[in-house]
Image 1 (cartoon, helix red, strand yellow):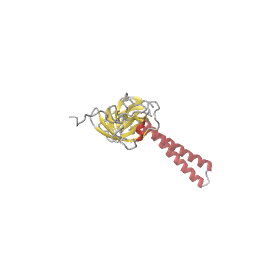
Image 2 (tube, rainbow, N blue to C red):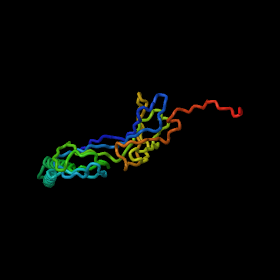
Image 3 (cartoon, rainbow, N blue to C red):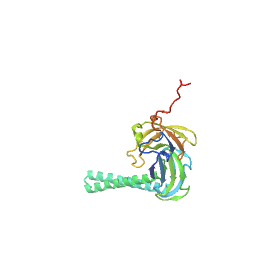
Image 4 (tube, helix red, strand yellow):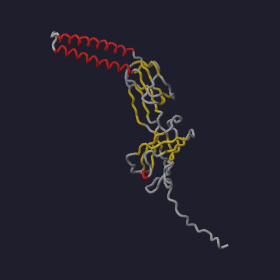
Length: 265
C-alpha cells in the first residue's frame, strides 16, 4: 500500500491588517484555523477487486484498523506455490549436503543447492508481502475525509482509494518576530473555537528557524491538548497568556491633561 503523506498542521493564521510594522507589536490574540496534523491519500500497491471498505466518509478509526481489503486469491495462491518451491529446494539442499559427507557430491553442487534455497526464500518473502498489501491498515488514528473507490471495483497499483485526516492536531501561528523576546517552547496557547465555543489549550512545541524579511513574522507550532470535538477548517481565537503586558499595544503614555485646582472654589 502507498501512503502519500503530507505534513499538515493546525494553522493559526494572523489576521491581515493587524498593522505589524518594524516598530509596532501586534495583539497577543490571533485568529486561528484548525487543520489536521496528518492528511493522507491511501492508494493500492496491488491489483485486484475491492472486497471490503471498512469505514465511510466521516467515520473515525484507530491506528492499525483495516481501511480497505482487496481480494487476495491470486496472491495467496502464488504464496503457496513459492512455499512449496522453497520446501523442494530445502530437500535438495539437505540431500546434497548428505552426499557431500559421503563424498558423493562436490562443493559446487552443495553451493548451488544452498543458493536455490536462498532464492526461493526471497520469493516467498515477496509473495507474503503482496498478500499483506491486500489489507490496507490505517497509519494513524483519524477520520475518512473522502472515498475515491467503490466496493467491488477492480483496481491496479497506485489507484487512489480514500483520503483520511488524522485526529491529532497541531497549531501553527504566525507571530511578530519581536515576540521571540518572550515566547518560548512549552508556552501555553488558549483557543476559543468559534463554531462550538469550546475552550482548548495548546503548548508551543516548535519555533520557526527563520524570520520572514518582508512581514517580520515567524511561524510557531503548538500541540493541542484536546481534539475530540474539533474538525479541520474550524476557526478560533488564539491568546497567549504568557505574553507581557505591553505585547499587544504601544507603551502607555503619562496623562498630561491639566487637572482642576481643588482649592480654587
